[in-house]
Every structure is written in C-alpha cells, then in structure tokens.
Image (cartoon, rainbow, N blue to C red):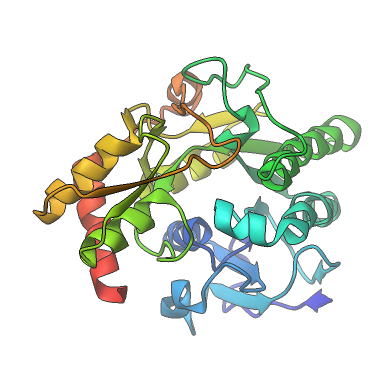
Length: 321
C-alpha cells in the first residue's frame, strides 16, 4: 500500500503514528499537532475508535489512513519521526485477538522499522510494564529482566512487546536506526473505551451505573496510575532525547485495586460496593514504576495529580455512558 499524504505545508516535520485512533496515540497526535508537526496516522479500528480523532477531520496537519500495520505499506515523501504504538493493550482485547497482537509486535514492528531505515527517521516504540511480568523486584527499574510466562494467556501481549524491544535493538545495532523504547505503566484518561476491561473504565462505568465494582482476587494487587497527558509528554521528551535504552514512564504512586475502587466511589459520592471474583491467570500482584531514569535523563515528572486526573476521566465517561 502506498500512502500519499496531503499537507498544506510539506516543509514541516512529519511524524507517522501507528494505532493513531487508539486512546494513548490520539492524545499523542494532539500534542504533536500543537508542536506544529504534520501527522500521518494509521489504524484499522480493531480497538481504536474514529471518535478519538474525529476532532482532527480536515486539519491541515493531519492525514489518516485506515490500514493494518502488520501488512506492508510505503509512505511517499519525508518522515522524520515514527511512533509505533499500534497494539491491542487491554487483557480483554489481546486475549480475544492474540494473533493480531503478536503480528502488531512482530510484523508491524518490522515494517515500521524498515520505514525508519528508508526515511532515516527517529523511531519510538511503545513497550509496556508487562515486560516485567509478575515482578520479583519492586518497584520495577529498567534493568530488571522480568518474570514472564512465555506461554500464558497474557503472553501474546507480553512477548510481543519483549520481541519488539529485541527487534528495535537489532535494527539499532546492525543498521544504526535512531531508536527509543518507552515502557508504559498503567495510564488513564478521556477516550478510554468503556468495554476495554481495564480497571479504570470498568470501575467508573460500574459506579456510574450503580453496579458493584468487580474486584479480582482480594483487591490487594497494586497498580500506579499515570494521567495520559503526562505519559504523552514523556513520549515526546524521550523522542527528543539521546536515550537509546528503555525508559519507564508511569506513576510512582502505588495503590491497591481495592483502594482505587474506594477512591472512585468517594469521587462520585457513593458507597464502596465491591463484588469479588477469582484472580485471572498471571495477573501481576504488584506494579510500580521506578522513574529515576525519566527524571534524570528527561527531567520528566508527573504534573497531573490522581485526584485531578480522575475527575477529568469521570467527566468524560459521564458523556459516553
């Protein structure tokens, strides 16, 4: 497939974003356009939504192509940056579509890297805290190699990201591609899908419907939640840096899932009403970002408090529920 973007000013820097209609990528595109960068977005809408980028229809800096990034494509003209973000990212999605998930991390990564070679573009890959698996080290630094089940229900996602990292470093070492790897921890904010199965939309939608909040296990497993604007700012800072090695971007404020449910209930002014279910296989018991590298190398830190971010997210879900 040949992609021929039409921009009003082709002299501006151009970024290609795979998975552009997804939750996180759509916020990144907004940031890039504010930087006056031309953006080519690719998505096949398996998990992304046209609504996430509808506000960009007709924008002179935006060009969208519906395409499966695990199949070949070429781009006419220059590309300065490639953000390879396409992949199902929630357990419900990647367990429903394990083959598509594996392909996005393998074929999709190779096609994006080949484009980076051709265009001499700087390349950023969205990896994940799931490369650490159910960690035996806490909090998780980038130097930790992880504790991952390579054949479990979550392996299609975990291993696709681990493979993607390996492919990127191979292209960097063998061909000199200017690469970046970001390991994303739990992120939340507007444009998350109500039915994607992750705890933020699940708890907020259940609370808004006056339904019990679904807790898996006893709710003692921990997560750390980063607001989406902080994450995409970290992406852009990393892309502009000289850091080749992986960098964690996520919150260092750890809380139990039960405590998270209590906070959601309190924010909505309702009683906490949990419903307990069996813990899914290979579900990580702890998760907390070690952000020292991001602070030292990128001067990145969280700017949006959990209380402010969750209010913005609740306000969004009230408009779509």
